Amino acid sequence: MSEKALIERRGLLLVVSSPSGAGKTTLAKRLLGSDAGIAISISATTRPKRPGEIDGKDYHFITPDEFERRDRAGFFLESAKVFGNRYGTPKEEVFNTLETGKDILFDIDWQGKQQLDERAGGDVVSVFILPPSRDALEQRLRSRGQDDDEVIRRRMEMADNEISHYAEYEYVILNDDIDKADTQLRSILAAERLKRRRQTGLRTFVDRVITPVVPD
Ligand SMILES: Nc1nc2c(ncn2[C@@H]2O[C@H](COP(=O)(O)OP(=O)(O)O)[C@@H](O)[C@H]2O)c(=O)[nH]1
Ligand SMILES: Nc1ncnc2c1ncn2[C@@H]1O[C@H](COP(=O)(O)OP(=O)(O)O)[C@@H](O)[C@H]1O
Image (cartoon, rainbow, N blue to C red; front, side):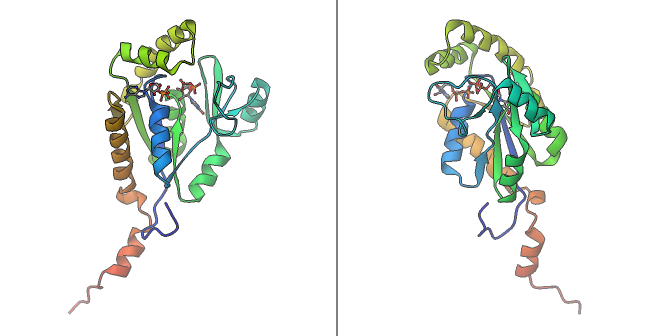
């Protein structure tokens, strides 16, 4: 939220999970590109950088030893092993962003979501993105052009595991049409931002606008 907001609000943690290829990166980029009130949490990972990815923008790419060191030093708010690689959310970045009054989007898996629930409970809003079909998921993985057949086969196996956790999420979006899914994600965010308990400055605001009731 900007400094000019009329009513102060508590930032929320928007967690978006899905099997690989269902569209969460696409949805996240669209949202971040047009909503100044939300920033993305940039994870650290031990996985190799893909062509086109930028260190510090897509991920903080670090070695397994460095990950281990940071993990032991309590650097991560949550962490998990996915697809043989380690991923973690840097704690300090999250708190710095929340302090600026912004919401934060997390592109993390179900394991990370469970840990955020434990650590940030009421501030977490969780959304699971489903693909329209198994074939469509595989097709999207292929069209992305980043993985060979063997990696795609393993990703499809992993997809079953990720999808089996959909019921742990508050919201589920079926991404058969990217514009529709985009609108639905924005609607969730808009409604969650208006929750009374998140609007911490409501009392002060209302006190300023109402005429106090004077007893006879
Ligand atoms: N728990 C956790 N999961 C993460 C984190 N960063 C990314 N992930 C998840 O790790 C999985 C693999 O991500 P990635 O290597 O970018 O490949 P993708 O499948 O193409 O998105 C996805 O399910 C991400 O949501 C993190 O910091 N913590
Ligand atoms: N609704 C959709 N219809 C068709 N293709 C889509 C849709 N949503 C995403 N895609 C495409 O599917 C591929 C995987 O999407 P991506 O956002 O990278 O998934 P994820 O981050 O969940 O792994 C990308 O090439 C993306 O452009």
